[in-house]
Every structure is written in structure tokens, then in C-alpha cells.
Amino acid sequence: MEYAFFSKELQDRFVEFAESMGLTCHVRDDALEGSVVEIRDELDDEQMDELEAEYETLLDEQMLEAEMNSDLVSNRAVGVGVKHANGESGLVRLPVEVARKLMAHYSAEEIQEMVQAIADALERPDNAPLCRK
Image 1 (cartoon, helix red, strand yellow):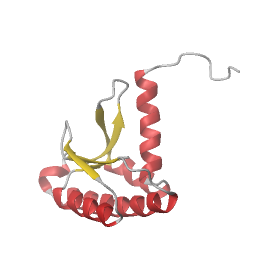
Image 2 (cartoon, rainbow, N blue to C red; image 1 turned 90 degrees about the horizontal axis):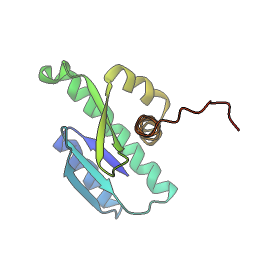
Image 3 (cartoon, rainbow, N blue to C red; image 1 turned 180 degrees about the vertical axis):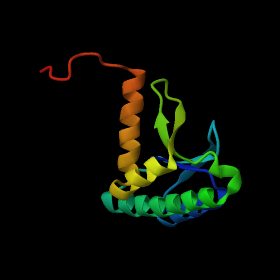
Image 4 (tube, rainbow, N blue to C red; image 1 turned 30 degrees about the vertical axis):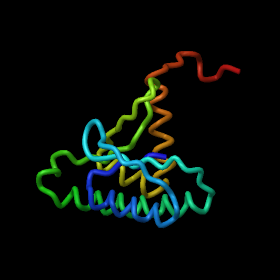
């Protein structure tokens, strides 16, 4: 799993939380902006739920920080990490308003899965009819 951050403080808090669960984190700079925390460990459902809840809390804080920072307000966006077909990581920027609507109904993992599915479809289009068997 990969988790995108624009704030080093929030990234560090997430890494500390994950490490307190006994997980190993790999942090790298994102190609566009911020950083990505990757967790390669196998997670059970309880660990995944705890990690996702913490990430969602930090995403909310990150969004609030961005909205209060006048330098960032013109760039109002939330990043969702994706893996490209060539194996490279990328970031899809969502407008804050869209991200809020999604976060009100879906977990961070579900949002990432949806965005990844869209990115996959764009990289490997399937023009076959939708109603095929």
C-alpha cells in the first residue's frame, strides 16, 4: 500500500503510527510534490482498518492545512497514488471538493482503488461493448 503526503509532519506521524504497529515503512519523494509512504508488509484486516483510519484522519488534517495556507489555496487538490502500467508510481490530483465528497462515503483505500481503476482504463483502453458476455 502507498500513502501520499504533502506535509512532512503528517508523513512522520503516519510513519510513527505504522511503526508502532510493527510495520516497516519506506518513504520516498513523490515525483510531483510531497512524499509517498509505502508499506510492503502483509496486513491483516484489523491492521488495515487501523492504518486506513489513521490515514483518513491525517488526510483530513492535510486538507485543512492546505485550505488555510494561502500559497496552496490556488492549488486546491488532494493527491491519490497510482501505479502506472510501466511500474512507476504517480499521483492523480483531485479537486478538494471532489475529494471531500468521496471521503464522506468511501475509505482512502476504496478511493485509491477507484482512481487506480480509472488510471488503468486510461492506460489500457478497452473499446469493446459494455454488454459483451
